Amino acid sequence: MKRYGYWLFPIIWMGIIFYSSAQPYENQDVKPFLEKTFDLSFLTPYLDWVSFTYHQSEVSVVALGVEGFVEFFMRKGAHVGVFFVLFCLFFVAFTKASYLTRRTLLIVSFILTIAYAAIDELHQSFTANRTPYFGDVLLDGSGALIAAILLTFFHRYRTENNAS
Image 1 (cartoon, rainbow, N blue to C red):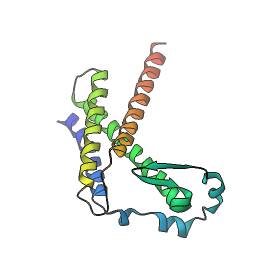
Image 2: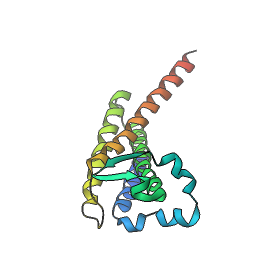
Image 3: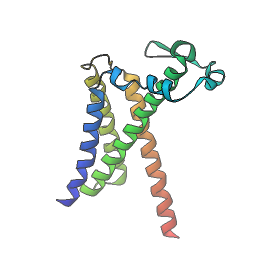
Image 4: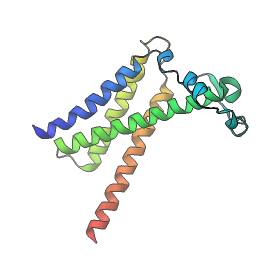
């Protein structure tokens, strides 16, 4: 029974993600905090050349202001980080509760992380002022992929150093 207790961690983390996705954008907007707390105007000359389209909207300092531009990258970085953690929690839970090969554990953890990312985006479609976007699932998947790569390198490093 003890080894199945590890499943509480990804379940709790998915609950936190679900709660966050249920919040309207206005409740998560950090631009007012950034404006009041930091003077980010010094970044403008370094960032004003950056401009691209994401989800049919221009992302640039001109379009969003420097605080909005910084917030965009904070939000997208959160996608990567949150699903990096979810992948790791799935991987640990599977490692403790099954006898599958390491490769299979990585693949199953990745598939579950992507599946939850897709469910999370669908959930956002029911939340006020939030929209689902497949690009965010790709960001979530990149967090899971980074975690899988780092875990693989860490395992190889430990295996090689223990063999010496």
